[in-house]
Image (tube, rainbow over all chains, first blue to last red; front, side, top):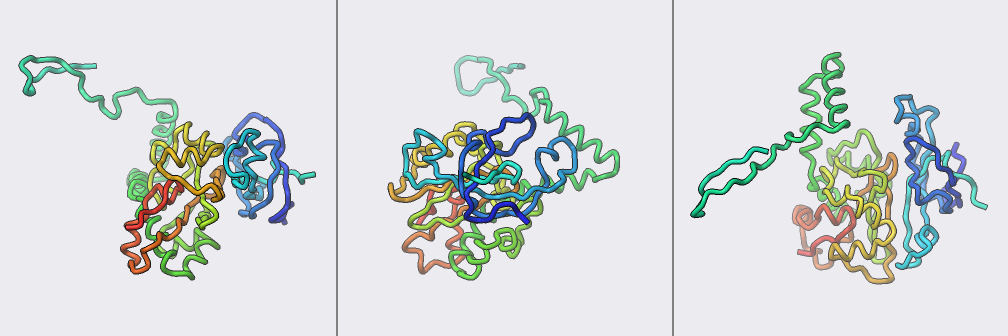
Length: 94
Length: 214
């Protein structure tokens, strides 16, 4: 059972821990919409250090409006960026 | 660096440097680690040297033709296209393309939406479908810019999209890999699947350009 469903608005944690993190810096603290659930995968933050990656993490594709990602975004206001983000990086959006 | 002299049509001899050998530079840290790991796995009997060689040969044998066959089939077979968009990994497996480690997401271009692929973190790329990524795909300039000014970057690739087309960038950050399904060019209605394969370039499956129409 995943914590979030497609269509749900989610906030990416604004956190900057050390280590092997697959959540791009530029998307931390931004709000998007769950595009799809990709399945469960070994946690790369564990796998990178030779551990077994458990517990597995649900992986989501989250869609963000570019104009909400970049303050100075100058192209089409409907443009989007889709990013794969593991569940422990997501919180419900207010 | 050593030098040599020879006469090649000039009226003087002059020295110029030899072309460096591919392995003339000292190995970097990760090259050494990779090499050491390979040797250890062979020494411990986990894999054989031939298995390692065959795995490298398999990756090197992949080329954009694999992806182009997938695209051409999707253009000519609506049921295949539906399966491809629903579950890319299973649909390319039907054509004998195995993606053992990652999952394939196929994103479709329409008259309203244009898709483009990047990996801002490193260089994730659908190698089983397209072969090894081009150098520009791995470069910092592409990875940092296409995600924040995609239209400007596409223009530098010679691709101009109408202002009302929505650009959807896909940042390949984890376990998914992406393939753009371009729009079938106008005027190709009479072409066979085999002829259509020839129109589908590597770059249009990354999303930085459009397929040729002839």
